[in-house]
Length: 281
Ligand code: PDD
Image: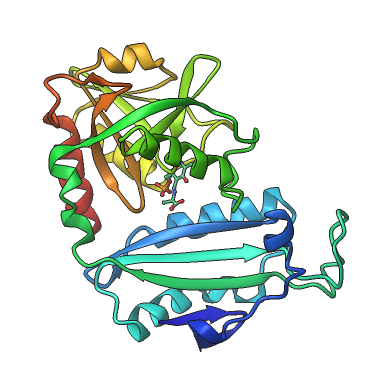
């Protein structure tokens, strides 16, 4: 694989980052994941916009390469011959000379910019989309600024591991009795013709796929309610699903051992998936 590091395209085993990088020592960095279908980047503009916002919220300077990010994404797709897959981008505050809680001087310490590709042939034809996934619920113990896409992913990893240990696929996180989101995706329930998903705020990541899917749902004459819901309400819903750049729209057929509907993907989530994939490709 060829990866991008601070202005250079290098083989992955030659890419080196300092041990003092604040991404490594302090999770002081942000990331984006953009999917590629048929060689085409999906919703790059949305990811770039959220990246800019994440950097701004953390006072990380925009790297010199910021305006070239689209070209860098395209170059990596070409060099690594990606038809279907993902591009991971990470920007950290950079590597000062020593460990220190105080931010380094942005004049001397420049952000570290890393991009790499993940080849996933047939990404959109995932077998899981046909049968749906099973989730558990778990207390949301992340920090309070989940609207910033930081690389601080330990708790989401723990949540995912708890799901795996229970023999399930993923976890929906719950705060004050209400579902926030999935470990790495936004969470939805469906009642009749109405799509319900948590309102935006600091409590969840503002998904790029979420924005697109809600737009398509409204265009398809579905009703959208942006409000929080409980696990109990979700278990009684007609359907449930998640969205993210890597799963698109994925039906959820079980929550905490309780089957949703008849335990098979319903009609709305698969339809939204189809619309999303059609519109994106
Ligand atoms: N995760 N919520 C969380 C906590 C996420 O980590 C993600 C994305 C989403 C969905 O956002 P989007 O639709 O913009 O991908 C929601 C990425 C895919 C990841 O961490 O791999």
